[in-house]
Length: 287
Image (cartoon, rainbow, N blue to C red; front, top):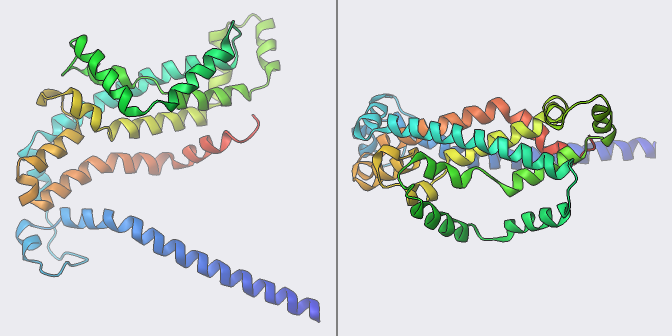
């Protein structure tokens, strides 16, 4: 009898704890998602309706798409969108090649001073990003690459953290596979392409998505290295909308522009969020 009472009491406490946890998580989710909801709601409000609201409303009875039209016609947002797409795809593609090859070299190949070189390589993570930006700016300026796609792309084609993450995943693959492949006459590049990359595909997908998000949200470097509208990214475009007075006067159109820029990243994360979690979790498991 006492055992049954103890068991019921434990189950009751567990249910209470679960209810409290879910309530707190729900409150936190509302706090995080509400700014996105407010941004989307405002983007569908007319300019007059938005200005006439003395008390903000949580819904609108007369949604309009005019704000999205205004956002694209006031500034060349379509061009900025295209520039950002080019910058993101080119930077991510080159970064993947550099990261995969560097991680393979540190994880599988043997050469003199490898550990020392890798330690020095990791020490680069200790350098403040501001110092790197200054060095990159001076270098790109001296090479006369300002206001070019090459100037935008080159400083972002490598990442110490991504190389370290992928190297650790490569190192988890048993050495026996490599030795067996070498006995069969398989080249290092073919072994990398046919064995290591498929095994670590979740981590590579994670790195790719994180880099895409990083490039899409890039602001400081594009703002610093470009002053020609032909090479502006979406971050420059939003800043231009705000600075030319249009964004301050027409907040709904400003929110529409932000929605257009944010939607691709949100969709990308929703599609690949399981692969992201799998890639991050794999770093703590034995391959």
